Length: 270
Image 1 (cartoon, rainbow, N blue to C red):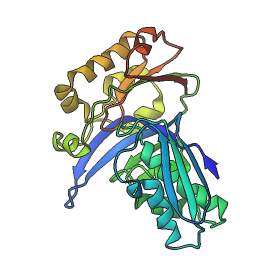
Image 2: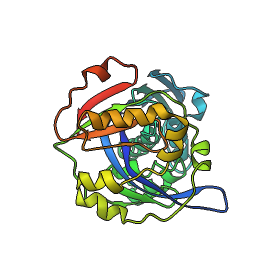
Image 3: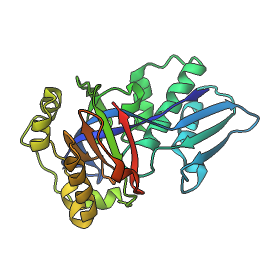
Image 4: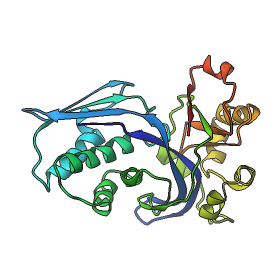
């Protein structure tokens, strides 16, 4: 079994409330992008997980891929597996790499072992693993609400445009990022704005609520966003709680000076 879990970007991110359990509610557009890990699983005498590529800190036994496998194994008969991840999506970068890995593992197991679980059931399993995980079951443009686990289709097609991804490698604690924000209701309909696909409108009103506090603490990130606009981006923003910044371009941009830096990740067609 092999699959290619892909990353995502957030198009607008509104923090709309805080629940009694301390979790926040959000409203955000999520769009899949072609920056991928490689996940492989083969039958084995013993269940093991390993990785290569970008280093994954922490105990391998706590990896979401292994947790996804154990979650389904608890309810269904699954064989022992040897799992390996080639990690290419930056860690803790607001790109959803870990969530994608877990969701793709669920989908891969469902297909390979003919569990016949529909997307709704898989999304319920995915929600037990993390807020972004349900999105990656259908892996199509969506609006995510609640704590991020409630997803509905978004009629948005960005094909024909190009994406430039920058990651300055600044660690931003999600808990710290949330603590510096004040939940509020946005003055616009996020889905309506996104589906209008008017980049000038996006630039004026489409906000990531984390940016204000994080850019204040990390002004170099604000400078990188400004640089993307200087290079001709139709729209630029931070993804999730950072620290990845992205620019959407109508044509291939000259990123020569960026490519010489440590924070340049990739230019890719959408």
